[in-house]
Image 1 (tube, rainbow, N blue to C red):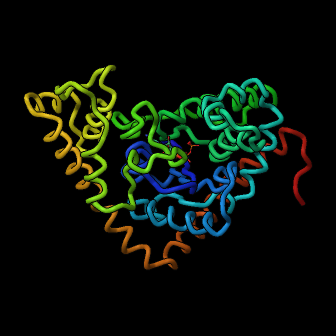
Image 2 (image 1 turned 120 degrees about the vertical axis):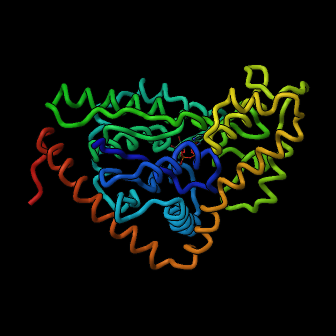
Image 3 (image 1 turned 90 degrees about the horizontal axis):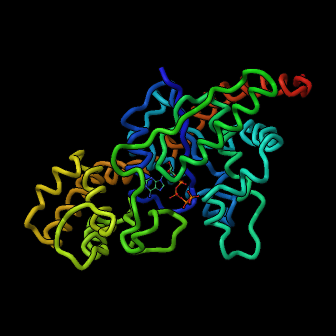
Amino acid sequence: MARVLSGIQPSGDLHLGNYVGAISRWAREQQPEHFFCIVNLHAITVPQDPAGLRERTVDLACWLLAAGLDPDVCTLFVQSHVAEHAELSWVLECTATMGELGRMVQFKEKSAGKESVSVGLFTYPVLQAADILLYQADEVPVGADQRQHVELTRDLAQRFNTRFGDTFTLPRATLPEAGARVMDLQLVDKRMAKSVESPQGKILLGESEDETRRKVMRAVTDSGAEVRAAADKPGVSNLLDLMAAVTGTDIAALEAHFDGKGYGDFKREVAEAVNAYLRPVRSRYAELRTDPAMVEESLRKGAGKARAVAAETMEAVRDRVGLLPRA
Ligand code: AQP
């Protein structure tokens, strides 16, 4: 059975990209060997209000449980509850190079135009590598934006194994068939992302069905009238991809279905399909939000299971590198 690790930052409101690209798959495919991590140490690479961060961490746990992650099946935990993440990150930083971290697209995007950025933003992909390698993950289910970071993880693992002897499993990213890169509904050349300021371009899990409908109806399309996926129709292509992801229908069948229909009908159907898809998780979230004890207990249990695996890997790493064993 493949070991799986994936993570999500408590850095803002969850959006449909997070859900179709990652969370819904995690829940659908979960197994006892699957680890899911709320990566709060990643979130602080950019400034966060402490009270807000605490609140968002619990809130994110609620959404993950609402999506169907079952703490009796998989392991759901908070990154900062397992100290080995930061420890392994330091060891790996001593094998990573400035050049390879400087090539990370996400770092370039997030630092562009800024006078000063934190060192953490630069080294963030190494911490992500530590998250994955600690659990000896074979697979990392993520959206397309994370592919480069998983490639770096492989490189760092391979380098460590060559230098110090076989220690880490080499992981690979697995992407969903549809919805691997959900684009913003207004900024159609940008990925829907928590950190992108685009209130009308993001479908939030926590919004009402009316708000979702309004956003889809106002989504940017193009001047033509045909519902067809094409490079010169990014807005329409994104809505088709979204509809494919939430209904499980392929794009060609959707194009045939909308043949001869206008953008109005198309958007109405997309909005209904998205709302139907999100209805169960939205309603389960509302129930769970009133049960903080259950959420806390799930995270406590998850941290215990995660620590046991992380401690074993870290012991091997200390030994290979020449750090004295802990008394
Ligand atoms: N637009 C997207 N389409 C498909 N998958 C996506 N993911 C993120 N955006 C899309 C996937 O969601 C998981 C969690 O990623 P995240 O916590 O980094 O979420 P984010 O929305 O990307 O948040 P931020 O704060 O804007 O962070 P950055 O920009 O640093 O990633 C991942 O599996 C991701 O692929």
